[in-house]
Length: 169
Image 1 (tube, helix red, strand yellow):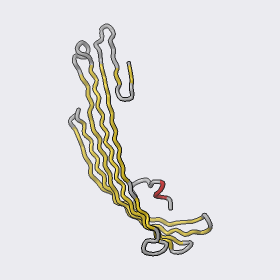
Image 2 (cartoon, rainbow, N blue to C red):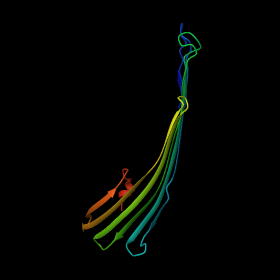
Image 3 (cartoon, one colour):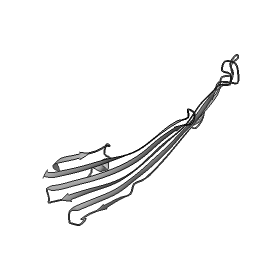
Image 4 (spheres, helix red, strand yellow):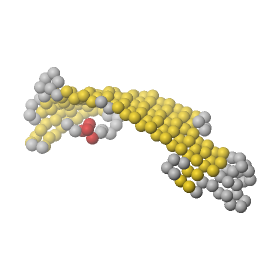
């Protein structure tokens, strides 16, 4: 028995047993591109506009096989797996934060996200694909009550858990 980070081999060569051999390989490739633009005092003083684009893709492949020996108990049997998983998403978002005065703010935002997924199982001759989109929006009123104390009312529709920077202002 030996092991490295990429391949796994196992073998039995005992009397009465035929030799078995297995190998598995995995590969994952992730890429992303996420530019943002933030414009302070957009059109009027106290208005902050943020625009952004998120693009991500991931490709994963799995290959493996197991031979059950060249004869005897498992005559020439081979079990194999070979599949590919692809995921791609792109989204555009806009968020506007308008400071009305020292205690009042209005925030609104919108996000459109499109995603494509596919899975191909070569060993079992099957595959599936999905192409969908989702939207999110928000409207919020914030009132600063005292130094370091504020309250807000928010209405919106979302389809994901917000990132840390989505909740920061």
